[in-house]
Length: 186
Length: 191
Image (cartoon, rainbow over all chains, first blue to last red; front, side, top):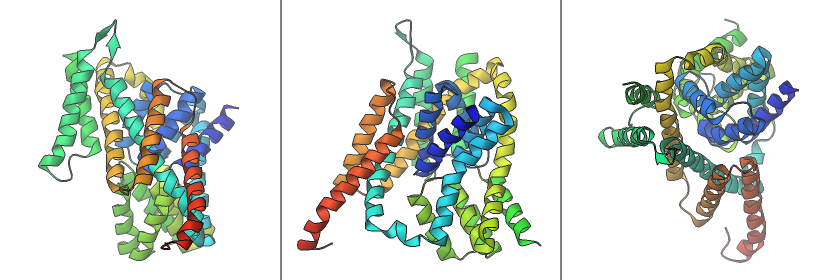
């Protein structure tokens, strides 16, 4: 049954993941948390791992979640499910339905769908930063996560001011790992 | 060389050497498929990018499927897509086997305390970039703000409403507005 759940869960992700790699993250969070496959903490770690390894992020996440739930078979099923919708859609678009995307009604739906996706991604980013940065334990604000958030945020967004392209996501992840070790280990 | 094998190896290489997904891959795919192999033209590459933006799924998969189909029909599409996925599948599968043990090591757990903050920043950054490219009109802004507020509330109060519901609702509202406005636009200045 877990295989069927994995298939349906990631099929949903594959069907609605507009807006590239990061568009899929709120959806995957949705699916993974509601089935209870991973907790938020573990999922966040895996997003970082997916970002730092080659390949599309949503495919990487599907492979990982599938494997953690049902081994090699689970990872195969989840990966297949996440890729299947875009595979079929592209085949249809190139083979017979080129006009569909130009259809004014389809365009109207997409005009509503895309800004909505952006709002969802923005909310996910804001929520994750607040949840990881502002941690309250025993009714006192934890200082380390807050400082880490401010410093890393300043470095990442500040690097754009110095150089136009700014730093790469992988560099930020490496830097944040070092910062984490320094803040908690020393 | 056999074309199917060539498709497979080429996309496996793209899949192995593109980090971060998304638009980082387009440059490599363009370089390989348009310039080196000349499987598709530059215009086709532009088209597929536009189509990829209006369809769900990773853009790299969309490109692989399209190029494979153009070269060798369904079999080509299948082989190119599998080639694209296989390297990262193997890497992530290997990682999934030892990540749990890995996280039990103290200093690695500390590192991930920092990393999880970086992930939030990266997601926020992706959203800001999309916002900047979004049309500066009232309609998209309204959809964006409503979805933002709704999703934030859903997260904070852990409500069981899928973001898919939000997207479908926005798509539907946009369709209704378009259908209602259309006759008026025809009578008026025209669109």
